[in-house]
Amino acid sequence: MARFDTDILIVGAGAAGLTLALDLARRGVDFRLVEKNAGPFPGSRGKGLQPRSLEVFEDLGVLADLQAVGGPYPTVLTYDGGQVVRTQLHDVQPPTPAEPYGNPLMVPQFQTEAVLRRRLAGFGHAPAFATELTGFDQDAEGVTARLRTSEGEVSLRARYLVGTDGGRSFVRHALAIGFPGETLPFRAVIGDMPIAGLAFDAWHRWYAPDAQLALCPLAGTDLFQVVAQVPDEVTPTRDLISAIVRERTGRDDLAVGEPTWLSTLRVNLRLADRYRVGRVFIAGDAAHVHPPTGGQGLNTSVQDAYNLGWKLAAVLRGASDGLLDSYEAERRPIAAHVLGLSGRLLGQMGTAEGMRRGRETRELDLSYRDGPLATEVQADHGRVVAGDRAPDAPCRTAAGIPTRLFEVYQGPHFTLLGYGVDKDAAGGGWQEEVRVFTVAPQGSGQPADLMDDARHVAQAYDLTPGTWVLVRPDGYIAATAREPGVIRDWLRATTKA
Image (tube, rainbow, N blue to C red):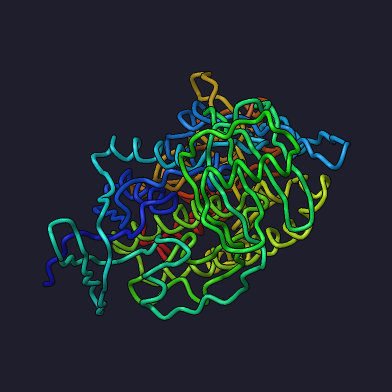
């Protein structure tokens, strides 16, 4: 029997790698998380967390911490000659019973990653910085990786390897996975810095052909994210930013402070041909790179990891390796859709109205209903079907304590809801990774684990009494049926649970 140093080697400790690590940690899966850079990413680049990602982060136990360091998006002030137009970036959506987070949360990327690292530390894990993957080989049982560390070269044996190592992914290149797409002519410098004299309550934008400038206040800090279009490749410096700000704003009373992070920005739209080769996977920017428009890149990356984590854990517990093929089958079409959306939004950038963002950027309607895990069950469903996001819904426990379905779902388990069924109808013998709850419809008087007094569950799921709904660990509906035995068969065939 081959000796393994760990079950999963995660290469890249950005948002995707940290999310995957956190999901595996709460499942008790052994992993190593390595990062070639000497320390955490210092910049704000992916600063918008969409409502669907906020639901993911609630499940992972970090939402309150993110809300504490973030804030709402500011209004946009667009300067066009002598005109100043104030617009709302997003149509503000109040929370609903089914969608508790209506609006994006602004959190600079360095803060998001810091929150994830702190949560990970609570499980006794931390990224190994200054640890670079230099090569790997795989066979039928696992992957042998070569790592360069401060102590020298080391070899590590893992059952699976996941490359979350960014747009220039070493893992993707080593696998010779194609990365077709385009690099657009847009060039910019980007960085975070204080700017004295500029109102902090608005996202300031100046539009001019080939000379756009955006100064966005970063919630929870005293910094602005500066994005300044430049005609050619330049070396970003504080002096360059100061000159650009002075020239494009027409103001000489703004003092640009010392940057905490400076970089260059090239706009790419690219999608990997494959997400898996044998026992090696890619996720996040290694699999898809986006324009910054619409705030989709980091969110798509986080949700890649959230999709892959429970599947890796299930296969390590004995599920068929084929379950891992559903990762690419579900996530690659999502990335293709999101890339199309980001590209369309980029084309509208030259106007104030083009900055507006609607429901499609919130990622609440993304579905796996055409994926391989949503096709094998004889479903008896209402408005939501297998593959769709499982809505939230306020309800009560049998003891009368207010709760929500998202609280019931929180954790690494599957959740089986029996709506308007006899409390013992599910039968016994369910594996520990499946938690069973019965739900009593309004006015039914049935004994149940949860009471749908205000009909929020019925309305969100469009359920008729006698329906069973299985919710996956990543918050999507796996199956609906009239008989729990159908659900049991799905679980056995898919996860061996």
